[in-house]
Length: 239
Length: 239
DNA sequence: CGCTGCTTTGAAGCCCTTCAAACCAGGTGG
DNA sequence: CCACCTGGTTTGAAGGGCTTCAAAGCAGCG
Image (cartoon, helix red, strand yellow):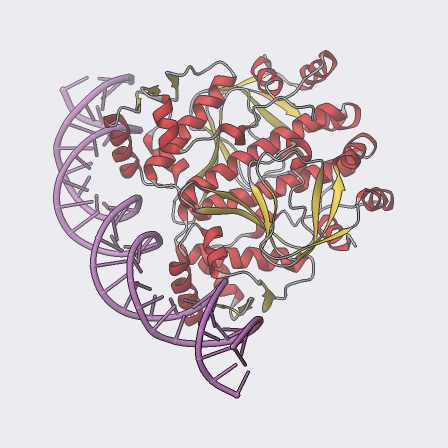
């Protein structure tokens, strides 16, 4: 059930059988959410965190004029809101972009892990710091990269992140979100994203169509985006 | 010595005397850095974290064409790189913007805290999650706010953050950084930042001059920026 | 007193937005 | 079975916010 999460952790550190068992003991039962379902709103008191088994989830913030910024995308094997364990309530919303399968992990259980499994606690801490690293890279994209680089960059990031959990090859992966949602990640209008996608397609780099990303030239795409996966911390370390 | 850090923590949770002592035991001796000094570069193996006692520090990423994006500013009482404890090396650089006084906290000591002081460990974990919340708010600024709102927003944020450690009033605070550095935070050119600052001054909201921020109309500034300090998690909670 | 780093201002141009409308595929109901 | 609706995609035209390029102004300092 939490296999993908373990894949993700084990790409970065060694997880003992005892720790694995502690994690398995921590998860509740499987819950299904439909697409376009906001399941966490800002300020809501939270006493569990949400581990994604299947589907795509977005963290986002709304502005008063109806604009929206997605601050991170989550895929299978990610905690969508592990940070709520220490924050207690969130400063942003969390919604599904596709039909989604999750398990809830009570904060009581996480607290127990911090008391009895300090190494595992550090690994969980690490995974929230990894989210922050992704935030930083998105800040760079939003602040300094132009539209086409920004778009290329997110396709590169998701190729790696989905690859870790076996959901992407070097040629393609499923990304069943709309151009509007992509625009909300990229700080662009959906109109412009549409034009950029056309450009990327005509350059023979990548195609985004029918909820799939088809990569014609991964090296070229990475070169255009100046993509360096270092911020995803794929090196195995003892945390 | 670590008074400002304790102020910051105690604005968010209760810290026992024993925990305070554990923190005091963890810090090394005081080190002084000059301004414009990069003291952490990406990939560098780190075995201590840096707690800021005085000065302004920036986390930033460089792009190949010489552009730079600052992803977060740090002030007295902040850890500039507590996340390096679990990450082991960083995906970004860290530099001083002003002359700076710091103490180093060995990761060995932090590890001991995770083993012997689980609550304090959760508080430290919280403070890295707070950094991530700041990253998210900057993503919103960079992605969706226009130049004047973005600029107003950062002035509001720093007023609150410096206020927590007693370094800002509602009317003013020291911010001895250049317009170029401000532009690197805001994802703008320094030329445009200069024009925006003029606009803010002429609107009677805020003045940035000689390394000081003078706030003429805090309410108006916050209204313009649509500033909501919820993302700074100033509510006291048991973590 | 001239250098240096930073700020300020002007003019021109471009990247992306805004506004508007057409297109297209899939699902529903008459 | 087709007409209709709906959500999403695509394209065009015009405009604006910010950048780029260039140069002058200004304060602090050796």
